[in-house]
Image (cartoon, rainbow, N blue to C red; front, side, top):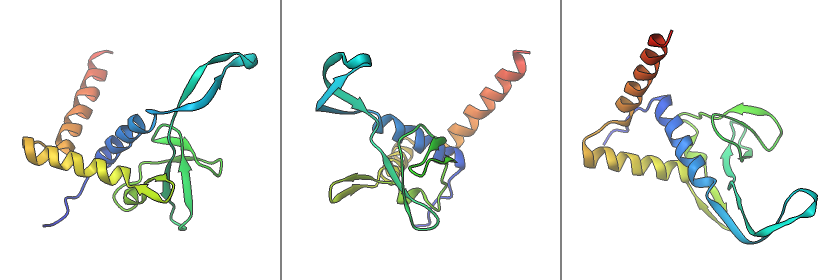
Amino acid sequence: MTKKKRSLAFFGLLHDLEYTIGRECYNGNIQNFGPRGVWEGEGRDFRYPVTFINKNGVKEKYRGKFPFTESSSGEMASCILGEERYQSAYYAFGANNLHILRALALCLEKMEQRFGISFDELLKEEKRRKTSSKGTKQ
């Protein structure tokens, strides 16, 4: 079976979905202190960092919202990785890794097969609607 070529919009969707999942982390053991040391209750929500392997083979952790975010080296970067690098994205859980973008892509592809849809086509239509609605608001 040949691999389907995907649009950058599809990879952008993967990043949006990953960010939604990554920001749903919670640790009940973290004490939550607000401004001036006021205790605000137990537990704290946080954005789980996603790790990518950059073009030099170096691990980069991202905690921000895509497509622009600050890397662990402090640089602002565009993170729509496209097909060539998205497979390197993972959540590190101790010795285990969850390849989050790859898993999301597989889930979306299963939905495409099951429901006879194309996310690339749906994303094109979404872009057309947004573009045409901007033109009519003038």
